[in-house]
Length: 327
Image (cartoon, rainbow, N blue to C red):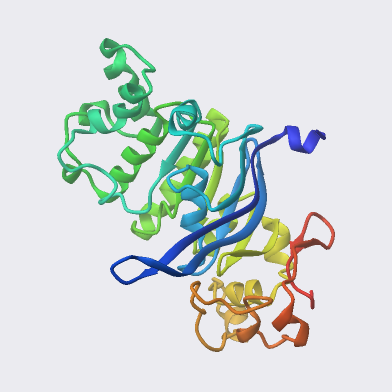
């Protein structure tokens, strides 16, 4: 194993997640929804990998496969060197305590009948991490970490604001002292004024606790701010992967260029002069994806081989990988 591999906390190899399409009373299988279609990437320790793309491209499904909330159809999920893609729930238990998740909706991801103390402390009980008499002290410590007052521990979720609820969700994710946290669009449901606070909090926690993030989002400006590297997904496949600085300065895939052209620039002169790339057509169905390159029906650069052959991710220098024949 080389040095780079030893420094990887998570490695995904040829991951596929297909959901069967069934028909009739006997639920006869007639096809598959190819939500994640053969993707590979890695995340180094203490790194943030941004995963971006349109709604329905497979970002959230990828995160849920990594957490083993879904059983992958095929492929490998190597967490700290151990393959967790097909092990039993009993064998998975010690790994689960080393993973956390922050969900998109701070309103729907918290039990409205439980107090904040119970919500944040539940992972401690499930994983038997502290004695019962010490739970309150640990929960108070978690509250301090995320910027909540410990006097709020007896409140229920509806007594918190949206930003406070997401802080409570972050406290719950930190409870078992994980090394990896999957952040599934953690700020998209929040007011813009609160989003920056949560992003800054995640950055501080990463620095102080040595966390590793998979940051799933569709807002490219947010991903640019928080991510070390960025992977762009389209219809279940990764089409481009590079450092954040390299990707935003030099996008190579036509889909990435189109996404970046839609990000507003806070300079009216530049914003007025730059060209906006408008993609033709709609995103194809993952139940019946195009042959070859999935993006070719909407790509102005498509040529005959794009219809027939799937372009593989290839390194074009500086760790910049792109799946495009024309790049």
